[in-house]
Length: 336
Image (cartoon, rainbow, N blue to C red; front, side):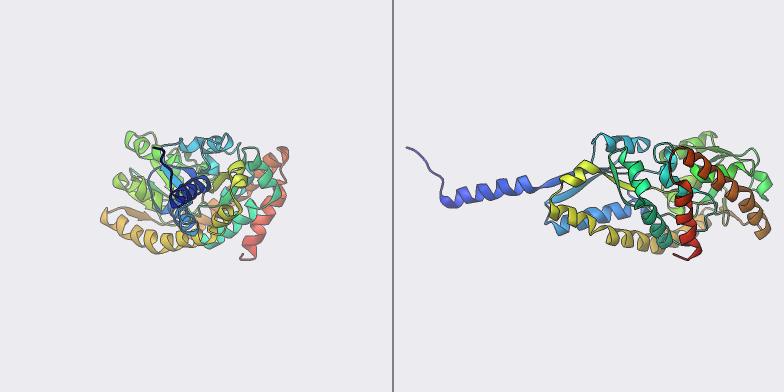
C-alpha cells in the first residue's frame, strides 16, 4: 500500500530545508585562549546569533584553524571567513596599518585607539592594501600602551636596557633599539617558553597579555611608564564571504561592531585593569618608574626617526604614507 505524507508533514520538511539553506556558519581564527583581547569577537558572535535567531553563527577557534602569523594568508584563500592578526607580525603584508604602531604617538585611551584605527581602516589606501589579501577590515582590538615585564635585575635607568633581549614587535621594537635593547619578534603564544629558556629576558605586552601568557609568573620587574606605543590587531573578514552574505545577515554583522567594541572597552577598563595591580602585588613584582627627563629623552630619540623612516619607506612602496601619518597625528592633536 502506498503511503503519502500529509500536507502538514510536507510543509514541515520544506520549512526545515528552507531554514537549513538560509543558515550561515563562519569559521573564525583566533589564538591563545579567550581573554580580554578577544572579548569583542565573542560578543560579536553572541550578537549576530541573537539578531538572526541562530541562522548566522560564528564558530570561534583558538588556534585550531591556523597559526596566528598565518591568519591573513588563511583569509586570502578563504580557509576561514574571519580572523584576528597583529600588523607587527608581518609588516610587509599590511604596511598601511603599521602607521598605528609607530612609537610615542600619544594615544590616551582605548576609545581614541578605536577612533584612530577606524579612520585608518576606512582610508582608501588601507582598503586597497588589505584587498590584496581579499580581506575587509571589520574592527580593531584596541590595546593600551605597552610596558615591559622582565627577569633578572630591574633596570635603574634606560641605560640598563643596553644589550637586553626584549620581545617587542613593530614600532615598539624600533623604539627599544634606540636605548640599546635587542628586540625579538615572536608571537604571543611563544613568549613564555622563550622567557623560561632565556631566549628573551623581557617581554613587551599590554597588561591582559602579561596575565594571559604567564610572563608575570616568573617576571621580577615591570615598567610602569615606559609607554613606547602599542600594536594594532584588526579583525578582518574574507571579502568574498562578506559579499556572499544575505542582506539581513550582513546587516546583523555590521550593525553589531559598535556594541561589540563597547563591550570590549568596558571589560578591559573595568575587569582587566582592576586585576592588573593586585596581580603584580601578589607576586612581589618590582614596579620600575622612570623619570620624566628619561622618558622625554627616550621619546625624542625614538619618535621622530621612526616616523620619518616609516614615511620614507612606505612612500617608496606607493602608499600615501604622509597622508596616513597626518591623519593619525592630526586626530590625536585634535583630541579625536
